[in-house]
Length: 402
Image (cartoon, rainbow, N blue to C red; front, side, top):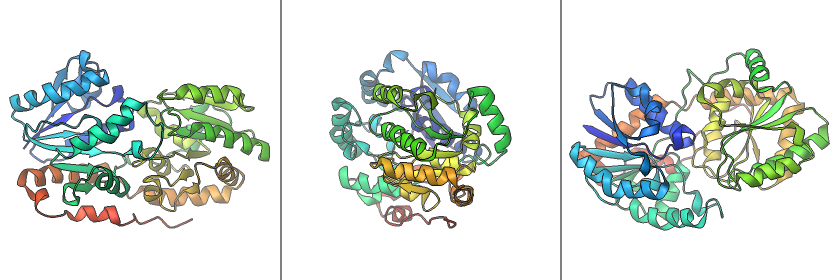
């Protein structure tokens, strides 16, 4: 089977979709499926895909098509022609933002979340309009939709009216050779040397997006934590500036704890495991997530996790995290205090998190994604409901230990 994959929504490797795509491709490369892969890659992104050469063909896309509107135009008018030229059987677009309307071959899309339907003001009005209305029309044109969680699958059926038999739930995975407990002592030495993080710290890894990622409330909760405990901890944000980032920076500058709030910017993949290991606790009170990879990565590295249950997060972290109401600063602060002051709580969360993280594996994700391609080619997806869709109605089993 000749499989094409569009890669142009990875934002130069600095998004969750980028990490999804890179891990999926590594999973494909480890299989002996006999299929061929053609990747359509923006010119400046080509070095990011050196890890799949020469096993996969890379087709350069001119940089003039990087801006969102031009990129949408390229997908709708240029990509179909390229698909025909390369005689592809299946095209996979790993984001609802670039799904095709033309149907030059069988079409598969991954939908990570439908946050525009849940978080007011998450994007500017143009992107909100596209996410709510245009994407709904495009979803109807896909042969099959992969949802990365049961929660997202339910949203796809509810908001986009995609029939259950055309939806499969495939959870994101984890690269356990990278994300594992390792040495906390060495990680703390590295964090002190590399980022001057010599104090215990709460870590939040997510793009700086306001209001969706909820950074402003985290800052307020940190202030409550410091006032209540007097503990000399820091609050560390890892992630690139995104929509609304200026509001986060402004709130941090105005904070009574401004001297202990750190912004690391984008954290390279190679640094993430040690950053998780070095942290005293990981905080993830997002207002909505289609999956939420950072909490599972932190759990796999033995870092206690404080997390909301919005969107799919409850499905993903189960009972292995200290759960919060993300719209209540005091709820976030209470769990910060509990985790920071009690080693028994931290150890309990570490054990439960390690067990929960074992449920996720990119090899499984890649294998099940290939099965979707094969079903689409065989016409299976149009005939009956795949067993995997039952996951959309069944909560993920939670780890014990909390």
